[in-house]
Length: 309
Image (cartoon, rainbow, N blue to C red; front, side):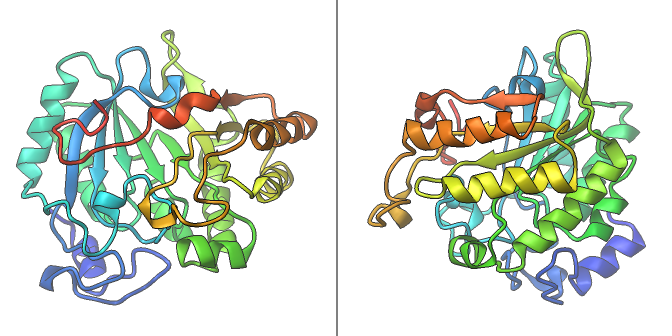
């Protein structure tokens, strides 16, 4: 299932910036609480991504359990946190490949790896397995951005579209909200490597489905529109205002933050519009905005076969 190099990585885990050095074959004792198995919570058709990612029919998304961040407002907290209530799946690689193949046989053209930073060997094994079956779907790497540059480099030629978050530029905010004060530095290094591989163009097929490129996501948080503006300025300065941006308004408070003054509420229209105006001022010309009622559409329930339906 794994190459020799991947076995070495998993036996002394250095996959993400946490560098826990745990033996993943011995269990899930690292920060992500994930072992050397597939660590898959759900494989399903998802139609809620950006139109260029979902395409006309949806995408086959693979939602991985565990995470190398602790975002206190995470919408996927059922599967992302240690002590998660979602029961660990028993997917084997063969089960995974068969489930994906069944979905692709319905006409779906793309496979998305959601929260893959801590399971890159598993991602590579899935990609190799699909290729061995003669399947060449568009591969979407949907990441929180907390990636080591050398790991991003290792994905060159395997990933078609990078779909990274860029959450914060202020270390104190990153520490408070995601337990990662080094996130601003780490994510920028990772984005530079993705940009080096793909450039600013997001290439799409005749049906508007992304085939190659990078699309950077940013979720505007209530009370933190200035942080969002700083993120956009950094992207413009460090990468290009020609890069594709998905500026999201879908924030919805979970139980962990319901008592907080700012994060305990939904985003105000005025906050989102402040950020969109700055986006236009900076010269961003490619990307997507969300309706203000989008926060009612992104509340997954991973106890269901399809968490989003």
